[in-house]
Image 1: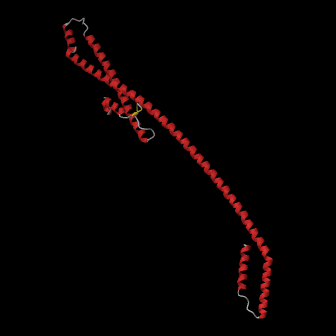
Image 2: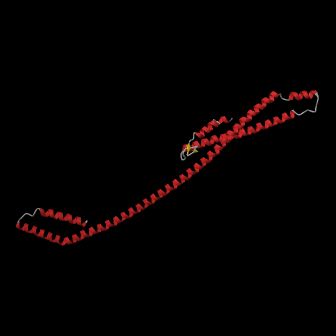
Length: 249
C-alpha cells in the first residue's frame, strides 16, 4: 500500500530531516533561483501528490472495511437471536448457516489487525499531508520572494542601462558639438592664414617688380660689356616663381 511509492513513513521523515536546518527551521529545498532547485521541488511535489492519492484510496478502503465489519457484526447479532420456529429441520439449517466460534474469532482477529494497520496508515498519511501543505506553503513563499527579487533586479538593471544610454547620448552630442566648433575654428584660422599670405604677397609685389627690373637691367649691361650672366640668377628666378605659385595657392 503505502510502500508502493518508494517512500515509507520513516523514509519520508528522513528525507525531510536530511534537507537541512536553517536557524531552527527545516528547509526542504536548496537556495531559490536555480533550475535544479525548481526541479527538486517539482519532484517532491509529485511524490507528495502520489502519497495523497494513496491516502485517499486507503481511506476509502478503511471505510469499506469498517462497513463490512459493521455488517458482519449486525448479521452475527441477528444470528444469535432466538428463533421462533422450533422445527428440527429449520434448526439444522440455522446451525449450518451460522459460523463456528473459531471462524468468528479468526475473522475478528483479522479485522482487528487490518483496522490497526489502516489506522497507522491513516496517521502516517495525515502527517504526510501536513508536511506536504507546509512544504507547498514554504515553496510558494520562496517562489514569490524569488520572483519579486528578480523583478526588482530587472528594474534596477533596466534603470542602470537607461542611465548609461543617456550618458552615452549626451557624450556623443557633446563630441559632435566640439567637432563642429573645431571645424569652425579651423575654418576661421585657414581664412586668416590665406588673408595674411595674400596681404604679404600684395606687399611684396612692387618690390618683386623692381627686383626683376634691376636683374633685367643687370643682364643687359653684362651682355653689353661682354660679361657672362650670373649663374645664380636663373635659380633665384625659379625659386621666386615657385614661391609665388605657393603663395597663390
